[in-house]
Length: 144
Image 1 (cartoon, rainbow, N blue to C red):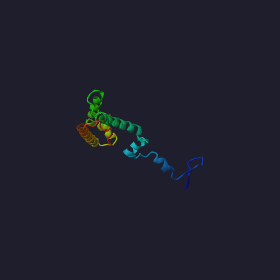
Image 2: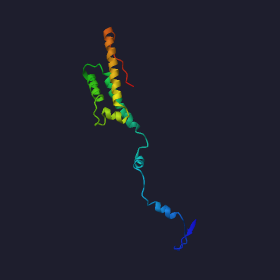
Image 3: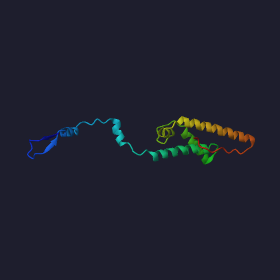
Image 4: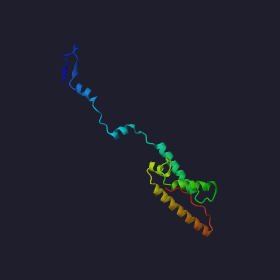
């Protein structure tokens, strides 16, 4: 449907819905908060950051496991630091164990329980080997 605009000297025409379309430009935007936030979310997942956090977690677990039976020196220091980090409940530091687990959607107490069970098995194996006179070298594996 076309309407003639008789007030203009140029004799132009315009469509009936033009006023509605122009008027809609000046309507308030009813965008929800989550829709607004979605506009600014990263389109690429945070894979490099997650990979780094996972590497920090793996290093802590590895230091705990590889140095479990260290008696003194640097290896014992690594074990003590790893144990303190893994079993601390502090979450106010970005790279704390609890914070990293939260960011990776992991349950810290589940990991801790697995580490304690692994440690108990390794100590039992070492004790049995010591009694039988075999080599007392512990198994080197990460808890999965």
